[in-house]
Amino acid sequence: MSVRTETIGDATLILGDAREVLPTLGLVDHVITDPPYGVDFAGWDADFPPADFWRLVYGSVKNGGNAVIIPGEADLPAKARILFEVFDYQWVIPWYKPNAMQFGKTGFSKHSLIWWASCGDPTHRPSMIDVLVVPMGLAEDKAIGHPSPKPLRVMAELVGNFADIAQTILDPFMGSGTTGVACANLGRKFIGIEREPTYFDIACRRIEAAYRQPRLFDEPVAKAVQPSLLGDAA
Image 1 (cartoon, rainbow, N blue to C red):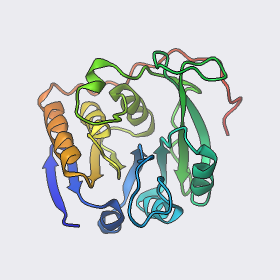
Image 2 (cartoon, one colour; image 1 turned 30 degrees about the vertical axis):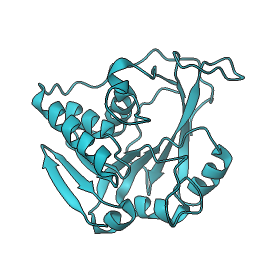
Image 3 (cartoon, one colour; image 1 turned 45 degrees about the vertical axis):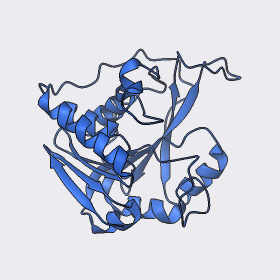
Image 4 (cartoon, one colour; image 1 turned 180 degrees about the horizontal axis):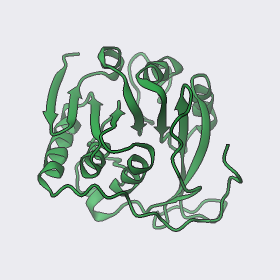
């Protein structure tokens, strides 16, 4: 697959297959990504990246950096087995979506999981709440031309908690560029990889627009802390 690179502010956007691009990159500080699921990719046995791919991701992160992964709810045990082959995870963060359309057995209207794993010796432990409360389906998240964008508020919360100003975030599944927009807004550097030209172009436009706005390096406002579902985190 041919590779195209665009540089916008402190963001480097790469149109290409992450499996081919990752080995060519230098080390980054952290990975924050929403990998594809429910999509069949040639060469993958299932609709979630296999352990070999996640080993490429692990090898791209500096010792002590973090990998933050949103795996989706479907087939979570199988995905967990894949991630456990590579990462020694340290926290699973429930993401509560109070205005979603579905209700689970716990009484939450909708919930997902966010995995946090340290790569190598953990030297940066973010102060993260046990339950991340962010609605989904807001107007600004629906109108960007991608079938399953993550809310900007979610990605901004993760970027602000896991990365310091001027550190570099890698998203090997950039999609419409939401992680990159959060990085632009919060003064973090960004490397994004996306294989679909339509979504790549959307990401370029969104990140360019973010850099045209006044850049306020404020951290995301902390959400109200919900009662912990996890107990004391390791």
